Length: 169
Image 1: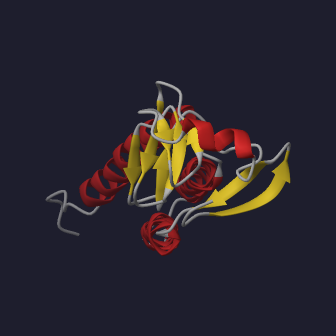
Image 2: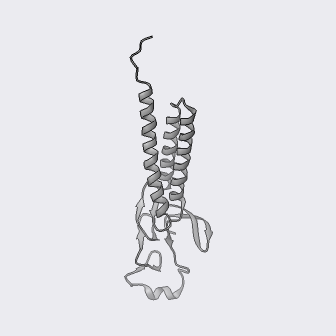
Image 3: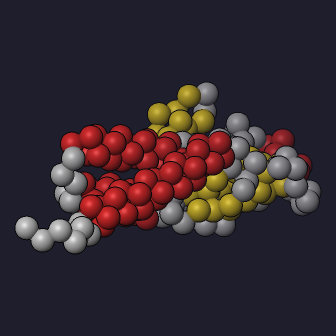
């Protein structure tokens, strides 16, 4: 599996994988949760705090789905099969993974594995984005956009509520 670690195997495929840069996953997750908790410390209205907790949970779940889900690691059923050696030298053969790649499969040199539906290697999740986690990746991008807009709105409301009104008691 190259530089990735797989957990909870079903049908020779891992359900959960951690990429070679999993420390960046932990750092990014900590930033999302930490920033939300920091912003929550300034909120006096409990309804805002409730919405902030909901936003943090949504962001946590969306990000974790992308960062932990198998991106579509393509693996040979039996890499020691003597039949595989007849494909060596073929232009679609990956000597590292010992598989014949489909047209949408590419080798990621960071993870050192072939990924079906390879899109890119994401440093923020510490792994590849491929067929297995592409839709959760787009959901994560949308939730991040919403998270940022929500944070800006909360900050703006806090700033506006602290502007003096001109009434001197």
